[in-house]
Length: 174
Image 1 (cartoon, one colour):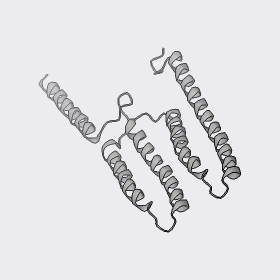
Image 2 (cartoon, rainbow, N blue to C red):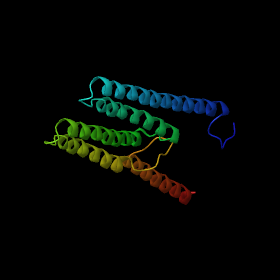
Image 3 (cartoon, one colour):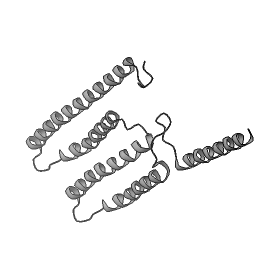
Image 4 (spheres, rainbow, N blue to C red):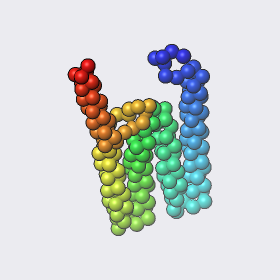
């Protein structure tokens, strides 16, 4: 193995196989989603055309499909720090679930917008999550892909200053 190359041929092959497997599982999920929802639409149209209920499983399953696809994309793109993944998952699940809830609200009870309450409170939690991420994990991944907090980076910076001071002191005395 070359010093400049961080991975062996075997480990790269294993990572490639995992990506292909993960991509295949997402494609299966999308295919099954499309086929089952076409079937549900047909069942809905033939057996209960007075109420369009197929929207509920269509959009609720879409939330799961979105998260599965997002998990693959984050893995394939190499987004490994869990703090960053957490923010992305949180924001994506908020958007997809709120879309689903707005549709449910519109279909079931369009006079009263009850969906505003979860969107405000969960939206505040998403904003807080993003602020905390920016505050504590906004730096680049350092040291083996581990994301360090601002405090840890400040400690490292201070230690570096102390080491340099010690080195100058040693050179001065010699």
